[in-house]
Length: 169
Image 1: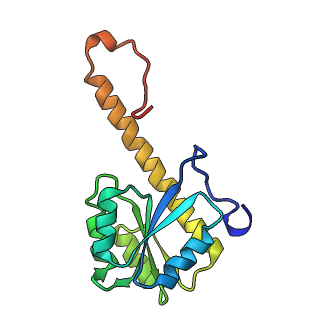
Image 2: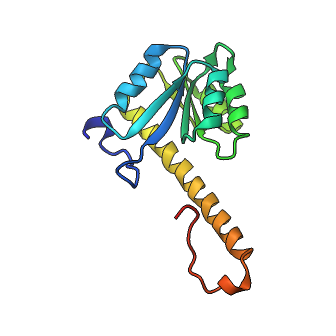
Image 3: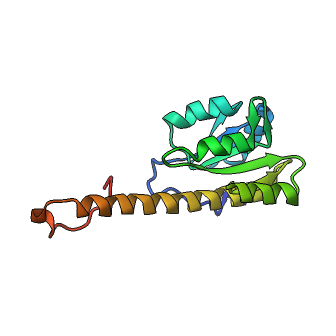
């Protein structure tokens, strides 16, 4: 890897990929994001609207959703509300050609992760998306540890001496 993607965090296993969902009715936006991440183990999935993205997210775990400020069937706020109802909600990054401080403040206040201005700058996209992934991964790992401790505490007394093993290990 070189350039803007050189410092992207890498998944722990060689065969794993980091999944991102791009939600845009504009195929050029999705193509640009895929181009930025083309030499990485990151995969950019695509949906053209809120409904399509929610259908995808019900079946697949992704760390980050990058969505347009406005979509044919709703806004980023509609998508954020629905995404936050998921068991392991991805972090939402909003994109807009007219990104400004007011949009940035609104996105953060509503629970979104960040705002990316278009046209995209590769280094800024990789920086924001990789930080979002690290933040999401940290939260997921904490949830897994908590779930592991809860199942350990509900074990029978005969297994009290067994070493702790994280969920999925």
